[in-house]
Amino acid sequence: MTVEYSLADAEHLPYVKHSLLDVHTQTVASDADHFEARLRAAASNPGWTTAIGYEAGRAVGYCHGFSLPANADWWSNVIVPLPEYVTRESGQRTAVLSEIVVRKPWRGTGVAAQLHEAWLSLRPEERVTLLVDSTIGGGALQTVCEKWGYRTVANHRVPGDPTVYTAMIRPVHRP
Image (cartoon, rainbow, N blue to C red; front, side):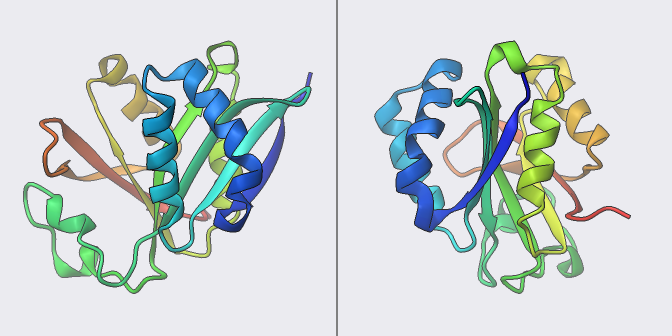
């Protein structure tokens, strides 16, 4: 079987939401209503897009994200302040990869990397950032992100969340 990739924006969320919910509820231990509310909130951000992988018509994984607006406070949550040339946002400079989820049978098969690249193919920004909980899998998730070209820029703490995340960044299109 071959995984095929579908791309969508916020306008098409009603048509693909069921696929995202199906993967999420089968993969992540969280409430479906809570996820749906988070998904709607994410899709309300400017430039929100998603990539979904399907095998034989069944969703096997997805990723989604959005554009950082010019007035974003994203970089204000770093623990040690970064220089302005790193944190300056124009509304078109940086994409945020919010989430990437793959069903267990397809993990380690390259589906996550292909979803990531399919999603990046939609991005007009010059760079992409994400947050990684470096304790997941003993650092394995961060290692995967490094293989995809991401580099650590800071430690990041989301207000109200005790977890310290690693903020990583890479060019959208690598040479």
